[in-house]
Amino acid sequence: MAPTQRKVLHRGRAAAGVRALLRAACLLGIAASGAAPISATAAELRLPDGIVTHADGRLPLQQLAASWLRLVDAGWQLDLIAESKPPGTTTALPIVALRSPTPGAAVWILTGIHGEEPAGPNAVAAAIDDLAALGDTLPVVLLPLLNPHGYARNWRYLDLPTFSDTADGHSVGDSSHLLPDPAEPGRPRAGAASSPEADAVTRYVVRTSAAYPPLISIDLHEDDLVTAGYVYSQGELGTSDPLAQAAVAVLREHGIAIQLDGQTRFGETIVGGIIGPVTDSSIDELIGATSILVDGRAQAGPSAHTVLVFETPAKELPLDRRVAAHLTLLRRLAGLLAARPEL
Image (cartoon, rainbow, N blue to C red; front, side, top):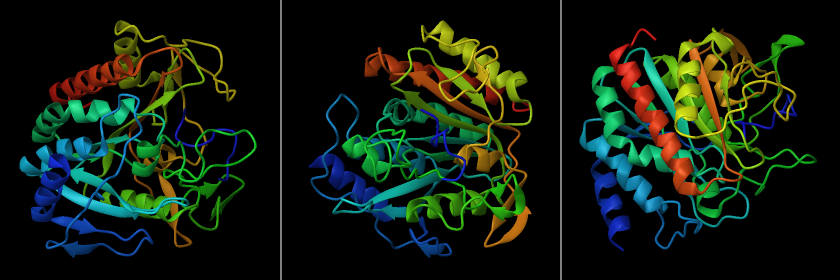
């Protein structure tokens, strides 16, 4: 499913190795409360001993983290965005980002906003070498697992396990507190962030956009309530965006059913498998926003040219096929961007 609920506008070895490598990494610490960044070169980022990952074939958290460290070995910066400890959990898990060595207009890649959508985080782990190569050509910001507790326990939101028509789950990507209310542009859609995690993640996006302004953003999702997927294109070109069109072609070539016309279950019009810009208070809307409100003051938004959100069907496909589709998509788009960065 999409990054936020579309119906609402306001809203043993591996673990030891991971700890040892992360201890040596330079980290940028940002508290879950949204405090200013703190240099933490001597800090240690821990995955708790004994953390258990939902058993449906998805990679364990420890294995995902080990894959990210290959980027650190390649000179990328590892940032600690927040320590996530949602209601009902007893241990904190890190939300991290990784940045390629050279700043500038960047490709942003996000996965794992919804914990019951494991294909994206697993595909990123498999595509690490491809992403490292892309980072040699273009600046890249990678947010590889934005909802680690959700991934570990197969919960969609921080506070709810599944999508609900009657309750608004707290999404880690909720950006309503930074996005202007369409009816009153001088006011945000919400007076405060819906969770400490959403506060920390959105502040990270805004801060990091200064040195790594998003040119292209890619957000990987799944939807277990549909049998055919589609692509949201939140950027300037909407349904005419060539990268969105290329992505639809890649998914169809890979045997992923795509709904080419009609409407989504949220009433959004689909043109050639693509939905144009929507107002949904998501992190994707934030990344594409030209104007935002921070601490009550208007300022320029990240203003990405292309913002793509991929919704692949999960209802009738095994996880390995879903991961393979996301992996193919990442590799093809990475290759296309490396060859034609003007896109």
